[in-house]
Image 1 (cartoon, rainbow, N blue to C red):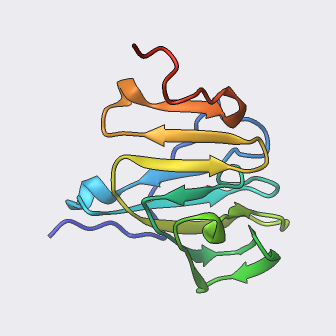
Image 2 (cartoon, helix red, strand yellow; image 1 turned 180 degrees about the vertical axis):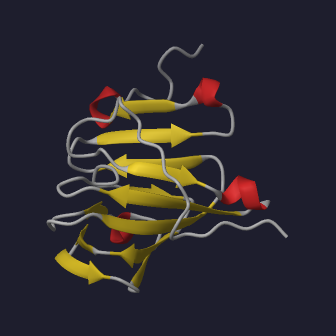
Amino acid sequence: MKRVNVHTQPVEYDESDPEGCKAGMSRFGPSIGASMLGASIYELPPGQAICPYHYEYGNEEWLLVLEGVVTLRHPEGEERLERGEVVCFPEGPQGAHKVTNTGELGARVMMFSTMIEPSVAIYPDSDKLGVWPGDDRDKLLVKRSSAVDYWEGEA
């Protein structure tokens, strides 16, 4: 049986992440043989978030706080979550979320998600829509204002 320890699993930082979203990550699901459920560990230095405020279509996500305290932004406002607390983000606007470490110490969280493709994410603050099919060549991130009529460019 393959396994990882969520408390000691090393994370990697992407130097291209902008300030405010500089979180270390380990997407470890494939290393334990997962194919239908994904999980990632995030290490959040003070003042950093996992990603922008968003919601998903096609996938459900869960958050488990492993260490520290984080602030969860959701459609009804903000809440502090502490070690051991778990929440679910259902698909659609009611599952919108952003996880930020607003404390003075580091935090470590784990996100679980179904792995249904293609997936769609909506970013309400920037009015963007992202589509992630199984093939990265067709990945798309656009402003909603760039929408065209269904028949544009057709016969």
